[in-house]
Image (cartoon, rainbow, N blue to C red):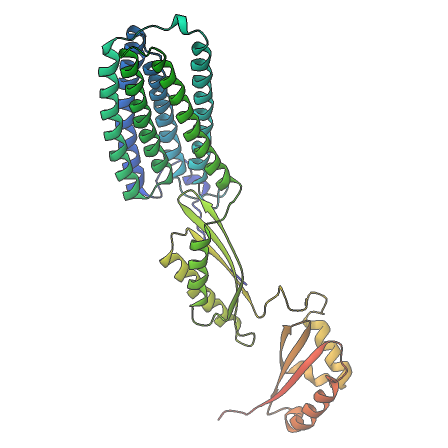
Length: 396
């Protein structure tokens, strides 16, 4: 039994953009445009200032700011398209667009960092060509540090408020920029004190920092794209929520996978095998809503099992209802059984049966005799394990 609720807009409405999380979408748009404005100014000041001040470290940091500008544009794209509602082609929504954008951003940063590192290393091979930098570079470095640290704190506050993984990544990217600007300040200051190689050394360190941050973002995004599960602590918390649901007797399979800022959960829960289908469905609904209420989960698939099908004997080889009824009629030599209600329970490789006899039928008066014949049948039967005969009394 599977319990899964998912709504899809019609294809006619797919073109009309309505964000799934309006607050998150608006906050992301605003913070990203603020970041774009700041990065445009910083890139201009750092690259132009680094060129005229003869500072390789400051120019490297300017390229870092330029990469931020590109990433901001990528965030705008992913935020808009990742916030679309689920449709027929994307039944789980478009949240993975954010993950793909994070992977692209991380890969780009990793490559940029390596390029800057190699360039600095090659220039360090010729120390005689190194030049002293202008004090202007130090002033621009301090200005960049203040701007980037302020941008980090602003963006992280917004990201935590709306719970967006992509915005958190972008905020920490801004913090890495602040750290790189600090390195630039140290490098420029060392150059001004007479250690001319400090500027190129700072450029190399900035390259390493950019590559490290990019690699980390790319690996985290890749882990999500290959359906890596939630951490063990969160999985255990979800497990306890399911087991605490009234009617759940056990849980023998629980799978999770991340979907941007949310998660998808699949669970196999065990219930009393003799309850009705509707009660089993009710328990599944209880379990599903408990997980949705208590955890940051987008959707839950609940499969109802009457037993632990990982350890119990398989039932797939057993006949379906027509075959079982025909077998009972043949063994008991009672064609009248077909006129009565018979319930089958497929358990541990065999079948338990319950026969309900109506009081106005011939067999109802022979219920005890029929029970004795059924008890004799199950002693050597290859299909049935238990058969119970019930007499239904007529109601006035």
